[in-house]
Image 1 (cartoon, one colour):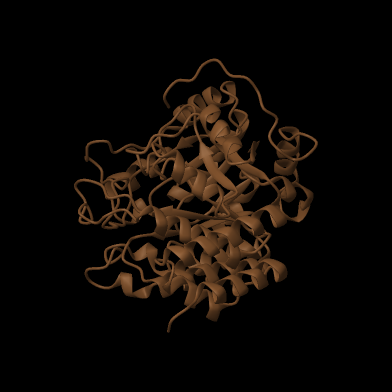
Image 2: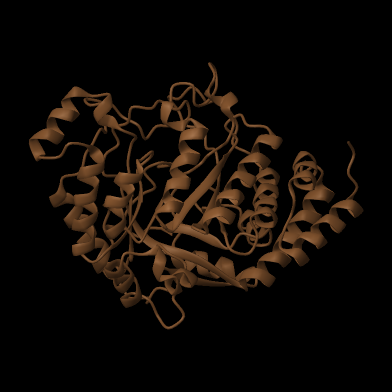
Length: 405
């Protein structure tokens, strides 16, 4: 079915005014984002919505990326993070190393420790099970709780993305985390089939990941989710993923941000020859996400996954409704996408200002969440408040020793 620019402008105007874009028009727009005129109309509306709903501030979290273990039982066809014991680069951090990295991050003025790790490695690797048992831990999740405690004691505010966790495991982590997350990635069951990106990744089953989002909502955990762009999903599947995220936010009120993450092909993976999404594709889906998700969910566009050699792309993302850059580290690489270096915060600030907006550092939780005590363990909320200024943004501290984690 054809769609005119005039129709898109009317739909988008209604969405901006009502803070609600419904599924049927969103699906129609999603199928036509390849039309440059329609893309331009959607991006303009999303930018207006962002300014009206969330102001001219764009946020970033100064963090350290701490991959507690890169052992993982899943084998997504686009991933180079996951390792098996004995693989080059396989690593599990000791608690002493967690403390060392966290202290260095605290000295460097970081507030967030991003603990990211593989899914359930103890189910796949006997040697790792034996190592955990020798340390006195029955599971990776139990070891993760202690790692978060160590990071907190070193002065950091953890944000954990550990793959699929049970509700009991999340409850144990909650006192030691400012926020938590799990990329939904996609609601496409089709990609679980043979030949799909998630065929060999049982923990990527959409129903399981949606259930964890629900259980995090039941626990009142400030939660990060997101969508991958370019792993074989269709436009309608992308729209369905956005509406699944919105339904979770409507039901539980715990979704603080959604990441729009473009696929990056990596050597030595089955998807090495698949192209990364084109610039227009990323801009269009950031804009549609802004209109679908409404005022209360931040839309994050990781700046290292945009081609920052092109000032134009970053400017376009900022003018298409993106209001957050996620974590940017002065200490560590992006271990998931090691080929994509972080921009320097000063450069990111200049580019944000050139787009007519203001960059502010935040904690692992957004400023407005600090006024919601029900979403925190009391001691964790007190730690967050101690690191926040009067407006809820991170207190910016100078730093001198930036070394690789």
